[in-house]
Length: 315
Image (cartoon, rainbow, N blue to C red; front, side, top):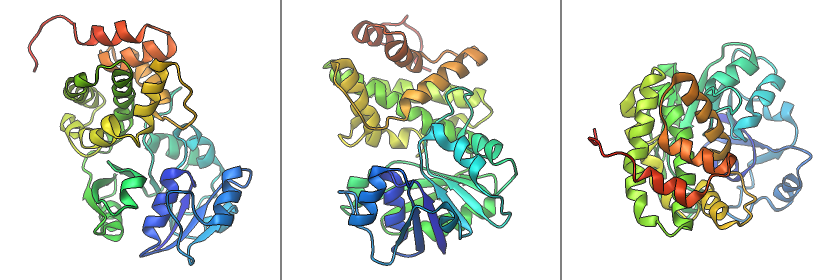
């Protein structure tokens, strides 16, 4: 299969590296980026080294000379990129990103199709895993979902290997919401770490999954999707791993330290706050993270309040 990957960040570069071992791959990186020059010159990013036969380009036209395009960029830039892409009914797209548009609360599949302005075969690639683990040969399981059964089956079969086992997704709404919101729970986990309350992360996992399950149901998805790979299945990589940007951001934030890497959960938290208010759906954990990040609420008091709420049945 001939594949192009748009976005040469940590995850986009890994996808290109992974797929190039059994596909013809082109990786597109923005021409104005300092990282782009380093990537092209060194053919690596410190975590991995690309195969000699894998193409790296700063030309979007060159990258789009394919029928399968994987997009892995910052979620908040997706609409702008989608608007810039030329239309081709033979081309299919895969979103390998986890987030929600912060000023609309929309899922990324919705954002892309609105920006693109035309219906097109579209799938999402979600699930747990860190680049550092994958390049060390540690396998994991992921999910590909789409409104098109044919597309998701083709992609799962084409992209599966001993390193990544793919499952067919069955709930696009639930998988996208679950994949995005786990980053917000990851920030909460980092805050607990920074406050010396790491033992509460088990409770955070249980209640966070329940919270997002209810939300998925309110949005028209399958509530059980929150217990799958997209959300609960990604918790180990997000709530506990030293490689997790969202967890690390939360820890740095409560410690008053600088964190300069992308943490998608920050803007997703804004989106979930919007959704919560529109649906009148209580999201205690997501709201607590929002209050700390944007309303400057005291982290210790706010997070403690999560675990001292009124006594009630667990389910």
